[in-house]
Every structure is written in C-alpha cells, then in structure tokens.
Image (cartoon, rainbow, N blue to C red; front, side, top):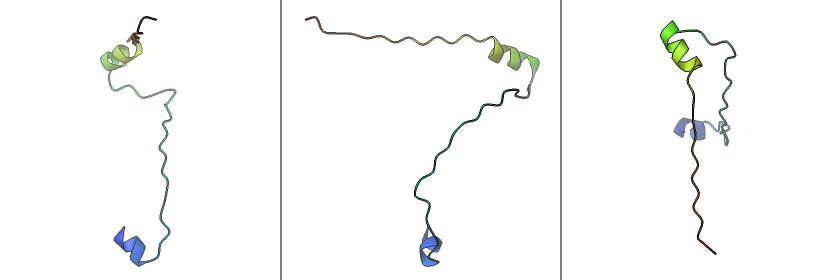
Length: 52
C-alpha cells in the first residue's frame, strides 16, 4: 500500500471473487467421491410469529 501511494500507482477499489464449479471435478478417492456424490443435504428454516 505504501509503495503504491509513493509510486502514484492506481489503487483497486473493488474486488469480487466468484466461484465456478468444475462440472467434472477430479476424484481424490472413490470413497470421498461417493460420499460427496450421494450425500443428501437438508436445510431447516423455523419461523415464529407472535399471535394477533
């Protein structure tokens, strides 16, 4: 940062990282691959409302 200011370099104001999933990822091992492939994920949302 200090060098950039001393050298009058332009500063980057915004950085955005996105993810790109590999459609055919490499297999580390068959066991890990099967665990990842056949894993089921559940998400539970609980809402509470005050009675009227």
